[in-house]
Image 1 (tube, helix red, strand yellow):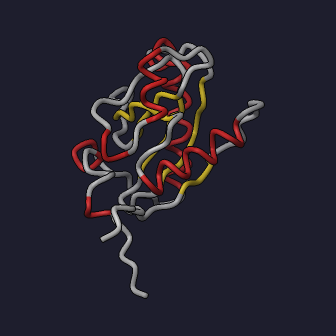
Image 2: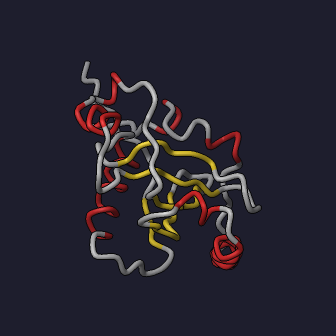
Length: 157
């Protein structure tokens, strides 16, 4: 039996993110969302502030990598223990169908930014788009299982 897994869910972009490497980052995130692993994406966590539930942030490989990231980049999904963190990352919402909606990328200073009023305003503005489009967000408890067997695509061929 093949150990390759592919998960349900699509990736959408909520707003244009004009960063020189963003196309590469978006492509890597799509691969991560589909397969559950990327060598440049580390820890993926629920962002508990501000309300509403449903948004997360991922830690991305920094420009200057340490030994922990170097080891992470060489691992296979089956051997992963604890994903590394960094101060560079991506923020996204997850709906109840396991679709991801990218709304922010921070190249440096992610953790301080997550505590800022500016971040709160961005979340509230993005939530307005969610609400207008009748998107139902996944709650924090459900998010703990976004890479569980529940979401694996079933090949009917």
